[in-house]
Amino acid sequence: MENRRIGGVHLSNIGSYEERIEDFNWDIAKDILDWKDGELLNIGAICSDRICSRGDGKKTALIWEGFGDKNARYTFDDLRVYSNGFAKFLSEQGIQPEDRVCIFMDKIPSLYFSFLGVLKLGAIAQPLFSAFGDESLEVRLASAGTRAILTTRKHVRKVRKIKDRLPELKKIIVVEGNPDRLKEGEIFFDVENSPRVEEFDVYHSTPETPSVLHYTSGTTGQPKGALHVHNSIWAQALTTSWVLDLLDDDIYWCTADPGWVTGTSYGIIGPWALGATQCVLDSGFTSSRWYKFIQDNRITVWYSAPTAIRALMKDGNELVSDFDLSSLRNLASVGEPLNAEAVIWSGEVFDGLKFHDTFWQTETGAMMITNYPGMEIRPGSMGKPFPGIKAAVLDLATHEPVDEAGKVGLIAFRPGWPSMFRQYWKQPDTYRSKFVGASENAMPDELRTNPDLWYVSGDRASIDKDGYYWFVGRDDDVINTGGHLVGPFEIESALVEHEAIAEAAAVGKPDKVNMEVVKAFVTLKPGFEPSDDLELDIMNFIRKRLSPLAMPQEIEYRDKLPKTRSGKIVRRYLRAIEWGEEVGDLSSLSDE
Ligand code: WT7
Image (cartoon, rainbow, N blue to C red; front, side):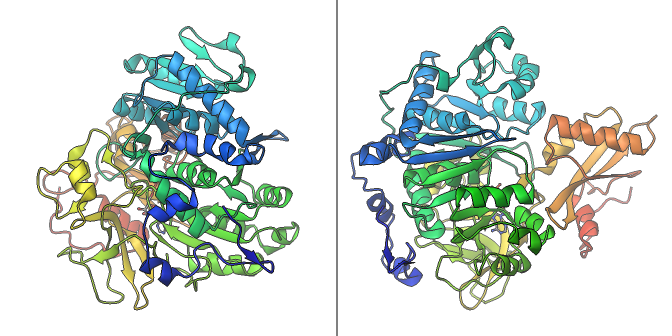
């Protein structure tokens, strides 16, 4: 990518937002990547081989730091060779195109190599957050019919617990550590200590070849697998260029874990498609560690999340001045509402740089509504639709686009952008239910290409008179804790597996830093009494089975839970109490 700096001043990649909308065409992304029709469209190859063949093999692709003083650097040539290594190894293990390969590890370098390797093979990468406990893991592997899992010593014990219940899981591969410590049936593969694989015949994916399967939570039922395809790269690369504004000499840091979509779309695909240098910090959060990471690596572009920003804010302005953060030039945020205070604060402490809020979802694969470099930021607003994205807010009752400024409705998008999810894994009805105006038996391919439908995001917002979008809240019961969605149903199902619990409801309660945390309401089985010990035991039970995110921060014991006359627990009611909101119409509740 050509750097456009005039007299030291960089004109942003997007230039004029209005002009970009005027002459928008997704093929602009192909021009930016200098990609011609007929060339190989494989995300794994575009992010590594292609950068090498344009002459940047020696450029640093990954600057990695772990706990303590562990660190490493890799070039694009390393990325190419090590992803080849994974692709070759997996193919020798019998993994076929479209097989699901789960990547279950901390943010170690092999996560990044294997992700690209799986894609080079034409298989489907299924990254899962390494903090997931065995039950969260099992549900997602069972749903996807996963064939192979790549993991580490630390996390393999969770796989051992569940493998007997997963007949389709044929290969358990441990990518680091000591091969002698493995159990029978487990395979060891350390790519950095294996022979270099210079050549690999990359799978000839088409635009519609599946690429990544990310699980995301809904209100009802277990998490759903949002399936993406190789064509997504155009939206990911173009938004990376125009919103994150990456240039050739930028040092970029996306703080998200690739177990979630931000960590793959903007922590792997978008930036490496452009040949940018990325930083990864695989150690827990402390404000000083983060600032030091920016300082030491001279990070220029930083994509993070409101929870982290609020945690930094809490640690005060003085700490910021202990570090030299003058390298920073563009900041962006995603995952939850970015409150106006956080935007204003960042402008104060980072030398005028304000976080640019971006709104999107696992399902959208790339940014949809965002603030752009050069545009006036209205603190608290998510910004405006990305050029090429046709967005609206639909009336809550009629589902017609709202044209009145400030009126709240459902955020919706016209289908057809490149990174749109192609299906919920094996759940065509649930996929269909996300589209307003869909005919009863419409197939996924018809839905995603029909420009007369609306894809409904499940969030509420209003649009002001100048076209800025303002987030209001979710339209469902999904809990957003620190930018991570957790499904109440998944938590409730796990809660009722605890020996003491008869019934359970999980809702989000307000939290200063995480926006929401999980709160559980439970009724106990006969013979069990409420106590602090029991509360702790239940919390740990959920933390181990599901994850620290899903763990209730508070458990309230009740004699009974509010239910409809047909016996369905009404979370809405419990949630409203937590938020001090109007409880609404209770006429449908049972008096029992
Ligand atoms: C949900 C999607 C896509 C990146 C990570 C999350 C909420 C996301 C914002 C924002 C307010 C936001 C929405 C959305 N969300 N960005 N800028 N302002 N809310 O992906 O796990 O699929 O979550 O996160 O509720 O639907 P996800």
